[in-house]
Image (cartoon, rainbow, N blue to C red; front, side, top):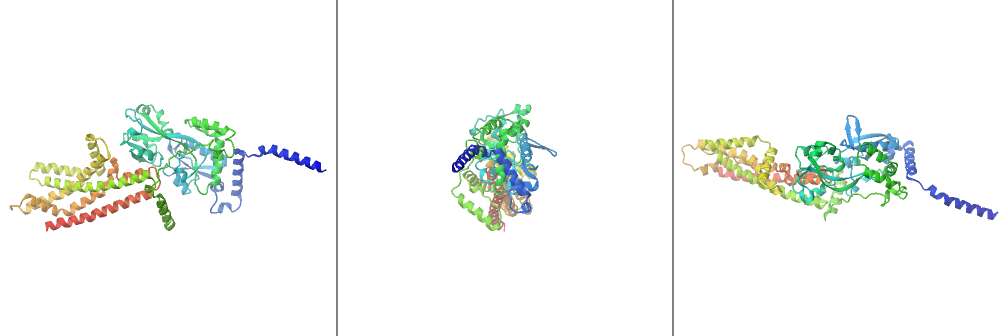
Length: 553
């Protein structure tokens, strides 16, 4: 009898050993199990009322998944009325279908994708978002990736641009939030920022920018247009990056698990490939990924964490500043004590810190230069308008009227255009043009006040033998209030130099926010900086006015 039990034990062990491989869970079975468990939990009374549940459970509670989708990205995410089209849109529908819920589409932009995740306004991002190491700390990316692209520079065929050395000083149209923006800034390009990528081809066509940078997947549809293809061409590409669906880093663990397995099965079964072909996007990446995930070593529950199967994120880590730890501590202290979320990107990475420092210095140069130019042109135009020659008076009075009637931005742009006719574009040329433009505009107003004071003094002192230089000094003293007012206006107007690419603080902070978060904090700091600068200028001008008025007295 004992031998029989031993025999039965050996048989059972053998059968168990034979069955172990069959008991290993497949990705499809794991996906089905996780979805089923979450659905059962959501149907349990009281679960949906709990304040902190995984977003996967809440998706089943609500019967819908909120997908962040772009609306102006041809072939991937577009909208006509209530109808949405594109690869990302179809992938979102496939995800919702596999979960058995309804898709709800919420418009996102490059700059708002991760913000809306953090604010719990969307459950998943499906919006052409490249997976790089910098974003790894901001969102939880789904692996495997569902597409891949690289940033490409597009420009007129006659423009000779072959590499990084050729873009210094060029204005490049980009969208806010693109990780590749930092790389262009590091090569001395001037960025013009836009919310939507669809603006870029328009700005190329009207020559607002000589170059535009965006994913090659975005420009693919435009090169099917004969006129666009005739005028423009890709110059060079860089920063090849895999695209990932993404969820919030907190409260989405189970949702991330399900989407990882779903992405894996969608590659193996051809769901991604089928939707890619349907939307006429380049399918090379999707074809290769289908083969990868059909391999036995990748087609496992652990395959989506296997470095041999998945793609690494683009290494976009920026060199940190030596004091980044202190800055992070300050941010956390502010959050803990005020409840406000503050980000100080200009102090965290060396590219941003370098931009910030140069922006502050250039802004101070601009302010000092604008004050000097305003005072110079005020005295010059005041003297010319005081001339006894009626022709000279009329000519410079007309110039003053023109300058007073011209918008400050237009005057600065014209000054920059004239300067570039004589000099090769550079930061110094841009700053110089802005100084001259601000000096002319504000100096013409102050000069008119001096000229009018001179005419009054001539009338008051008719027949008296008073030297013109003495009368002019009195006229300047009488015009002290107006001169001071326009000196302050000149200081306040210096940020307009950003419109012509002068690398002052507004331009520098705009560049920083093109590749870093914290726009609200960044521009608040800009406001504080200029308020302090203008306060100092007001104090100095007040002292100047006292001196001038004493001389008059």
